Length: 326
Image (cartoon, rainbow, N blue to C red):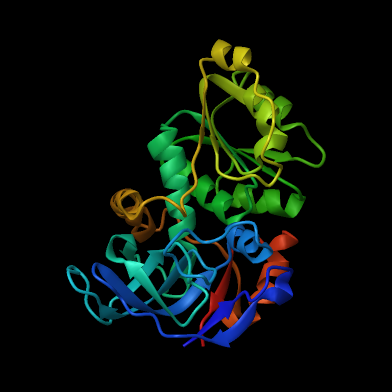
C-alpha cells in the first residue's frame, strides 16, 4: 500500500507519499480500507518531530479515518467485511489501509457521507470526553471554546448547543465568527481586537463561563481562570500558546474551580473504547437527527498532504481539512 511517511522531521515538504508494507490485523483488530482521513494539529506536531506516536502505534500520521472494513482479526465480533466505518486512531490514517482496535470503530452515522465521516472521530471523542465526561457541561450553563472555527471548535459549538448551553467563542476574523454564529454561537469574541475575559463577563452579567475548552495552554491560563465562573471547570487540550505558566492557587480556591488536562492519542485502548462507546450512545443519534454535522472546509488528495498541512498551519480553514485516499 501507499502512505504518507516522514523520513525526517521538518516542514510540510517532509511528508512523502511512499510505498510501505501492508498492515495485518492482530487479535481484536480490524483492517480498514481508508476512504479519507483528516488533518489535526497533532499531525503537524508529529511531522515537526515534537509528538512521536505512542509505543506500538503506526509511524504514519493521521488520528482518524473513514472507510470500509477489509478484514477482521481473530476475536472480533459485531463487524463484517464491507461495513462502512470511521475510526479513532493512534496513527496511520494517512494511508490506503490502517489497522484499528475494534473498540475504536464507529459506524458511519445516518445522513453523513463516507468521506465526510473522516472529520468526526477525533474531534467528537475529544470534545465529548473533555467537555461532557470530565467537565460535565449541562443545560443552562455558559461554555467558552477558544478557536471556535477550528475542527474542535465547530463541533464543540454544536454539541454544547444541542445540550442547551449558551456558547461563547473566540476567533481571529469576522468571517470565522460569522460561521461560528451560523453554528449557534451566542457570544462572539474577536481575540485580535477584544478581551475575551471582559466580553464573557459582560455577556453573562459578571458571572463568567462555567466550562472553558482551551487549546492554548500557558498563554491563556491566567485569563481563563479570570473568565471562569464560581465552580467553573477549565479543560485544557492543547499547548499552542506554550506549556509552562504560573497558576494562582488562591484564585482557583476562591472560585472553587477545577483545571483538567487530557490528551487522547496515548490513552490505553480500553479508555478509548469507553469514550467511543459513549460517543456512539450520545452523539451518533444527534448526527442521525441532523442536529449536528461534520464541518468540512475542503478535500485534497492524500498525496497532497503537504498542501493540507500548510492550510491548517496558516489557519486558512474553517472546520476540517480532509485527505482523500486514491
